[in-house]
Length: 107
Image (cartoon, rainbow, N blue to C red; front, side, top):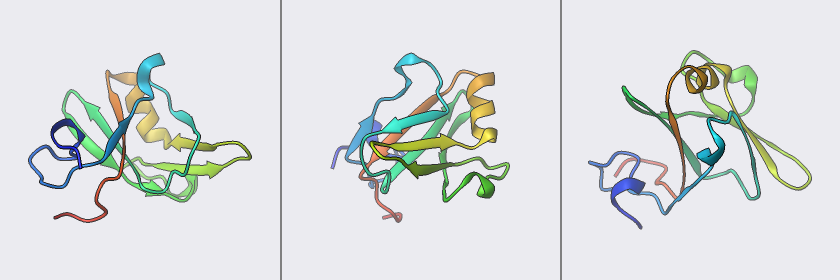
């Protein structure tokens, strides 16, 4: 496993395998992903800190805590952020870290 920046919590010994880059063209709220979204971790980084976004099954589960869900398509998976999360991305400078291979539980 990789350490340092790929840790969901840099002080935690549990680290992720890889960070996927999606923010090159600005703050998107929809990601077309070629692959299985199972096992991805989304971390929203703002000036005030960072929050791991909860994975949901649909937009109907979105709350003020935000989150994300995936919709399979023929050629890719469409990943969408909840309106609450998207609103933060549009109103302030953020970075969306998409991490693969993070532990499902704390060490």
